[in-house]
Image (cartoon, rainbow, N blue to C red; front, side, top):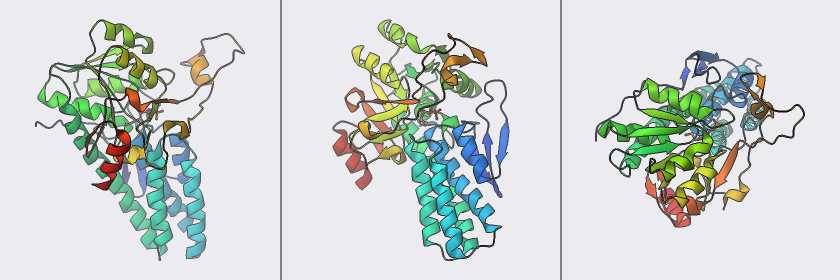
Length: 351
Ligand code: MRU
């Protein structure tokens, strides 16, 4: 299988800080920012300078290391150092509640803190583990991409929602990892990208990264997907996920559920591409997933301009949950999981 080389690197640990692409500036600017404190990392996750489930997992791991470096300067006892760092770690996780990867990565760092015997060694281990999560993520995404490419028909048009690409991960992407691997072997495939209101990750981020990597992409607004499905112009849907329950219900960016219903109606395969770290086996179904509520301004304004009547009621959930019955397969680094998901997910964690 041919390999696709992507130019995009989203977030990486450098010496004693975290370097990341500022995703709030897209598409006008492609700029890197240095995050040097734990609070800056909390704010970067919350304001979506860094976003996408695996990327905020990496950011969380880096954030714990940044807090550790700061607390080190206070010259505390080992126990007090650990206590304060564990509290700061929990605070970091509260920045965004839906994506389980943030919790998953910070939990790994907390384990290092709990088991540590020396402050300097703890900090070194936190750095190394952050780097490992970063590099593992890219390798996992390549596996997801290669498994997913096997179910992409020749010359397919793939619809995606939001951005589950290199810019949502350490690199390569999950849903867009499938696209990259498929494109490496069949340059006749193409992508339709939903705009993804209100934050427009599809328009601002998915189109940017696909254009940067030379993969053909057509931008459509969210309401257009069933129109193109009916016309026979969409062959499959591949999206990412923020948290997948033990029964296969999958939370992803708001609007994903609508796409899944439309795909089912038109008999179009609907795949979720995600690493096993996105699967939360502690919850039985998607009903238990906490959905982030975001600011009303994201809905009432576009580019700083109000687009609705003053004082109107607004609700802005950031994610929705696609029921497992609508999902054709979950593409992971261990292969493509198929229904019955309770069984296939449990088996994926055993092997
Ligand atoms: O609010 P965002 O931009 O962080 O939401 C991102 C998504 O919903 C992605 O599809 C998901 O995190 C998977 S990223 C591989």
